[in-house]
Length: 556
Image (tube, rainbow, N blue to C red; front, top):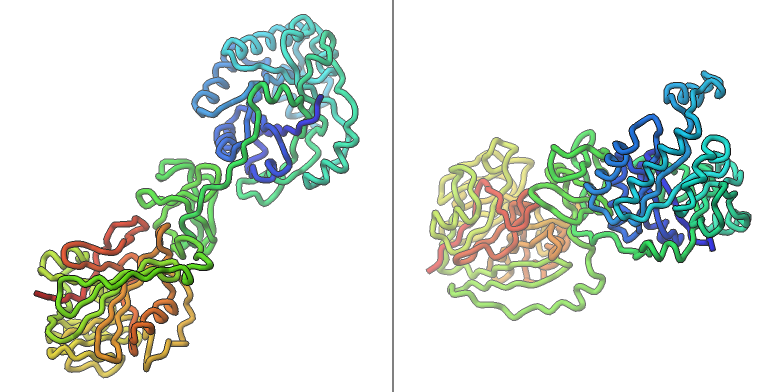
């Protein structure tokens, strides 16, 4: 019984989305063997949609050669092709004349055509070539074509099963799949016309639409902005089961990152993670993207296919959607006392982010802000100086590769340029702590941030940015303790913190003043003999970014 939905598509369907087809209970997609076969076939296969291939029989070309070319495309794709359908419907002997007739520049009776014996023998060779591979080989044609152009084919056609075209006129229209089922399918209550020599037992499929209907899931462009007309078919259920055409819907790969495009005016999306791969399409600046994987500074976009873009031109916004009950279920571990007098290190998870927090009693400690001697990672600075605790400091690049704003090291005021009246923290020779944003003088170990997070015990309401990112922040408590926090971000395990979330955590520790240091790929914290957080440079988790200056604590 012909009652299972199947679609077939050619190269004018450049964009595909398997989800609407799954939802419509489409059983199989038959793809023309052409330059889009592998790409679209992989999308459907990755989504759990069975695929088959159809080959257009061109009697102007050598039969064995065209069979070999199509088989090579199928083999190279390494896709699970359930069957091969040779398409037997070309009678013309001259493509140029055919194109001119299509464009109404030549009368159809002037288009050259092959004789029936030639068409029959050529098609027979093609069928035998595919069948010799052992693949299920099912023919496609229409009864009127065989009767008019190749009646001799009746001698060998009964050796194969057939998918037959027999159209009903519906007119060009855009439909939903529900509308197709409710308004179109009830009218398809006839069996396709049979070529001579075939019986109903030979027929496994019926194409009834004739390129008139446009349906969700099949698009004329790769960005899927406009539908393409689809050929819709009804197939025999037992036959589909026999060839393994049993859909197994699969969800999209899990999203690990959300990002926006920063390239101007657009960013190339390629078929693989290198510039040597072909460009599929372009994303405009500011376009949102979802990422499933980062590999060697390339991002794999969330899709069923192979879509990659350079991570260099993406701004990661968050790693994963925050859990709704994240704060309610968080268990804050007991403080872990490191082997340093007066310093406590603890980890905690808040706002779907992993946070590393140092609480430092100022008495008896020795602090140091590194002078600018070139870019160094936190690890490099810690090992070169022998410091037991090191975090990254200010950003850089606006004023050359020096720190962006005020900086001093052990009494040497080495960066006097102040950017945008940004605030800084100064730790005096006597370990006194002060914050300021104007009239810099008598600085000892000073390092700048880009904004106040907390002032006079209150969050800075002037901050409008709500982006979650890796953060490095520093504050001072009512009882004169320094609090330094580094939050991981841009990874599947940790989404990062917004400025408000940073402030909320610091306020819980009694911080009355705090500033935001350089974050993002710069955020790193070294304790004793290793980096304790997960830095992320160039979207590669675990890789450190060299920075312009550092805050060090030397302890016994």
